[in-house]
Image (tube, rainbow, N blue to C red; front, side, top):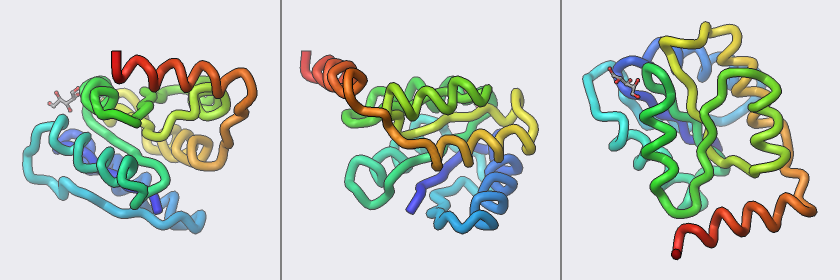
Length: 144
Ligand code: RB5
């Protein structure tokens, strides 16, 4: 299960991403907003809690730029959120950083690219090996 959420700026892009991913067979849990104005940190927390609790395997967050969502998401223990806007970074944040949340900007990405990035994010595995040590070092920063 994949948790997905957005603020008011991301509603249309979120709909497009959900439709594209469902067509590929992914199961999504839509945490809102359906259009009512909301504050992106609240939505980031909602989606990220689904990931840290183990309810959802990964999360997708959409706001105007994706930046506010990624700032908020990365404050939550256990979350490694990546702002994704190109396919290379999206692939490598899974391979090397084991990112568990992707953030995208509805005002910076078109739906075609966003849907492609979401699919890359959800289908690329973590490489482990030397990257596991580095991910562990990121986690260690949470308790310093
Ligand atoms: C909302 O207008 C906008 O500030 C928000 O969607 C996001 O871009 C913040 O980073």
